[in-house]
Image 1 (tube, one colour):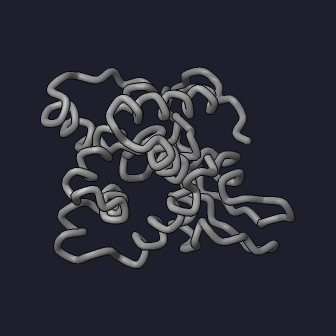
Image 2 (cartoon, rainbow, N blue to C red):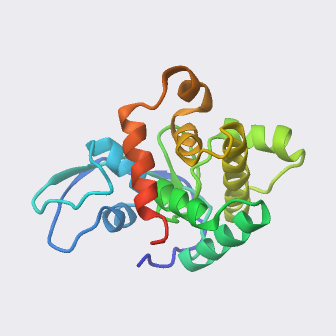
Length: 200
């Protein structure tokens, strides 16, 4: 299980490192231990997060940035469930997406600037505030979850309830999905979320 996260701290850049997989390891646990996201770790190492890890595999741990958005994982799970219910999104889908994106870690920032539990980019945050909600949302863990869930609802509506396409759009962008279909990396991402559904 995920440990409770500490309080707010200044943003710091962590160096790249290597990790050798040991017996009992999971990709999620390794990501949490090194302050990165499941998605980022899987992508960096070009591995399918839904498949078992092989003992002895050398993983490259991507650079991560800590940010002042912290909350205990149990609280994060509860907030995702409540927020998803409020906006008419299946809570199990929202939780699986969040787990894939961050492992419910509120402090994770990707190299692209995606932030928090739902790994929301600044542009997406602005779009949801301006176009979908019409109101400012606090830059908190709860706010991050709200933005991510509302954006997921928007994508589900845009793709007429097709969860596969909505998840793909969350990952690679709606325009790219419409114009190019799903990239191989995106297919892996979507299948991993489906495998997590009901388990987190």
